[in-house]
Image (cartoon, rainbow, N blue to C red; front, side, top):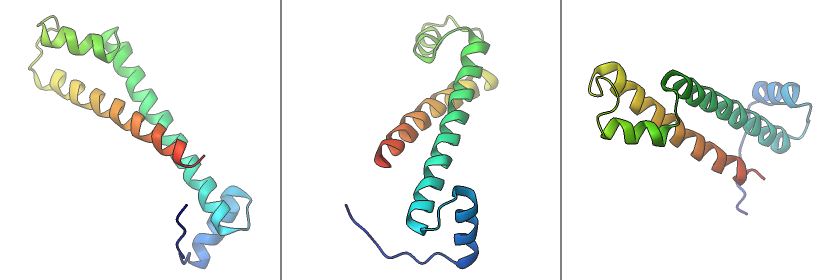
Length: 104
């Protein structure tokens, strides 16, 4: 494990301490980052769930249907935007879950 010296401004340390209940800055920062990652995971999962509900399928099925011309107006701006944003949410979720493992 690599460690570096990081200077945390007093105001930021106070915020971290209040948010986490930890007086040690290293522990407080670690807890705050874990919370942020979990929050972003929830956001990505909610975005994915919204697309799954909108299209009635999961992304691999949607992608297959899109490529096979089974999605109405597949090259329209709204559908292409949904495709890209849905794919991005899945990629974000994977990266965030990986980051959460780094914190373990």
